[in-house]
Amino acid sequence: MDLFKKINYGLYMIILRLKAIKLFFIRRFKGEVEADKYVAKVECAWADYTINKAVKMNVTVIGEENIPEEPCVFIGNHTSVLDCPLLIFTAKRSIGFIAKKELIKVPIIGYWIKQAKCVPIDRENVREAVKVINEGVQNLKEGHSMAVFPEGTRSKDGKLGEFKRGSMKLATKAKVPIIPVAMDRADRAFEIDRKIKQIDIIVTFGEPIYTENLTKEEEKELAEKVRSVIANSLEKNKE
View 1: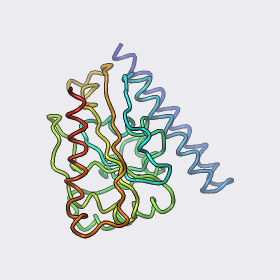
View 2: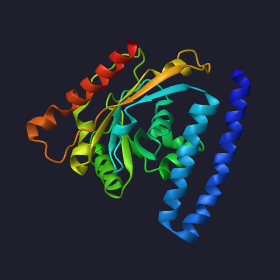
View 3: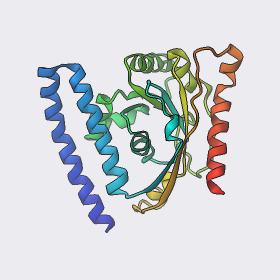
View 4: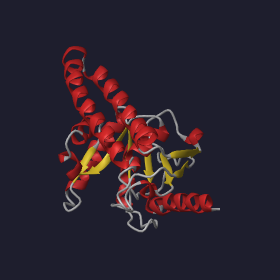
């Protein structure tokens, strides 16, 4: 069954590549606004297929009402390569991610990452951080929600790591709400032994944390505040 799922997903990736041709013509003849709408549609359909059909996660969503209609920054814990489609699937909207630059080189997915307002970052180049933040802020101002995994990399043991303070700047500079997201170890669906497994998972969206009137002291404490909300949600889900 695992091999069958992988073959099906491979076929889906071929279809996804062909959709790039349609995007080319939409952008050329209908303009950037219609192209963005099509990218959002493809992104959400990919997330749905990945989570709901390929992996077949049983996902329970808590706090969906906390997601504002306006652009926001989703900030969550990170344990799996499935976290990106899982977040898009549960938030029910197109999201641009701050993603490691290596993902851009991945066939097919790399192409759509660039189209979906994702911003690549070289984690070894500290100077590039300002450029990345500015690009993400511009995306937010243009109406596109973004997402950050502030631990910097996937947690290999499932434990919540420390949050980098700089990862909050995307929201504070754009003055948009932060939505804390607790994702209940999606690595159990695939990464532990590289075999696709159907699992039960809970995704919790915390209440919005508004950033437009924060003091400098509150900004300094923001990373720990968001981390605490996520940690409490993950702990509650164990009960």
